[in-house]
Amino acid sequence: MLFFPVTPFAADGSLDEERLAQHIDNGVAAGAGGVFVACGTGEFHALTSQEIERATRIAVETTAGRVPVLAAAGGPTPVARDQAVRVERAGADGILLLPPYLVTAPQEGLVRYVEDVTAATELPVVFYQRGTARLTEATAARLAALPNVVGLKDGLGDVERMHRIVRAVRAVPGGQDFQFFNGLPTAEMTAPAYRGIGVGLYSSAVFAFAPEIAQAFHRALTDGDEALVNTLLDEFYAPLVTLRDEVPGYAVALVKAGVTLRGLDVGGVRAPLIDPTPEHVARLAKLIDHGLEVVAA
Ligand SMILES: O=C([O-])C(=O)C[C@H](O)[C@@H](O)C(=O)[O-]
Image 1: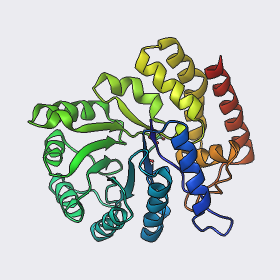
Image 2: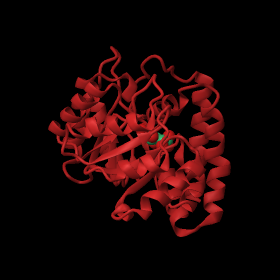
Image 3: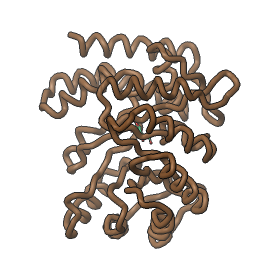
């Protein structure tokens, strides 16, 4: 299970370091195989580079070598290069590189962006295609051939594009070792389809607040327990996605509310996201209770 922790904020809006350490420790104890700190679920878009470095250091200290830690870098090229240097200095094992935003770049420019950022670090890098960064299979194969690019995480949900990318990268020498991740919001919902195109790894935001449910789903999918996969999709994940889709940004805000519901107060989200309404939190609480009942049965 790949764990994408939230970033807790204190009442004054600052990074709550103690709670971040506790949250990460809880996730590792619950069986996380890797920690991706300060990424999408961790409100990368709302953090300063100093906070990203600090959060990475906390993740490294808390995990203490038990599992690898990857941290985010992204945005404008110089900022992303600086963040790459910072997370390397903080002890991360790898980087999740988020794309530049506000621009639609040509394929050549995306390659140049990844080259420029990866040149600032020795760390292995996973590129996250989402938003306006949409790779062709030829570009993906070029990225996969770069010395420290080890993986591609997909946040677009264009299955045909991703299928073409997987096939193109796998066909080049060394491409068999390249890692693909399903990084869509509430990735379990698309996990069966992505397995079908050779993308077995996925990031689970649900793991952050209901590791029991995320683990049970992952086991059921791996073991071919279709009945449990379908029950969890129908009775937990699909209604969760319905709730998530009612307000933009809930893919993150609901996760944070879920962590607080499970007993660790991680505070609210930073603008421009908004916290779920009390009615939505109550719906989330019910869903979590039901999901836990299903996996305990
Ligand atoms: O960068 C991120 O935080 C993600 O993409 C991870 C999420 O875990 C996403 O896959 C989800 O919502 O399940």
